[in-house]
View 1 (cartoon, helix red, strand yellow):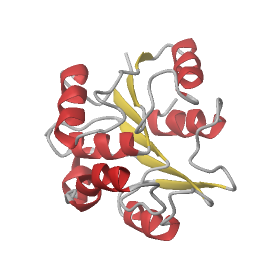
View 2 (cartoon, rainbow, N blue to C red):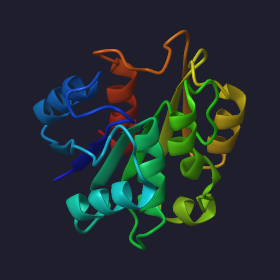
View 3 (tube, rainbow, N blue to C red):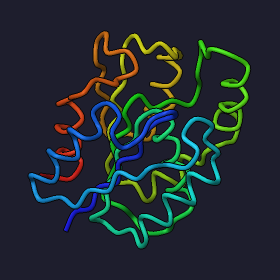
View 4 (tube, rainbow, N blue to C red):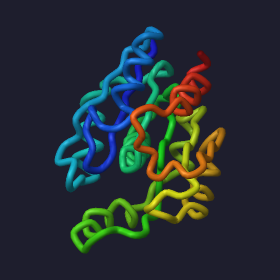
Length: 185
């Protein structure tokens, strides 16, 4: 059975934005879906989020898929660095390597390790056969070109949504469409 793990973003939870809609849409298609509550969502820490995802996934395989939003994308990438078995694929929604326009010093401090700790994309590419970046042309956290460019060597496809902000709507059909593409469904 195909398993999908949806990792919410910074300050989010499994009931945020499009996560419940996507979960229902995937379950209706027979997928086993897990959308965990990530620890300390208002001040996420890399090691805590990666460990939590590791514990929840258990043993990954080619029927294991991931969907991440924002910092959830980073969590998935950092998790994938730690495993040595290929997975099915991933969809990165509003994914980033660089952030702009953070509101305050506390936010900058939380973001700093996520931005400055390197990610081995070459290693990830070896175990991630198919992936998609969904990014908005007007994400308020900016760095559109830089983030798109950094993902370009990793993902199989890029989808740019015009004027979708940080892609937090209650429904986003592009996410389902791209996950079905990645999963070959």
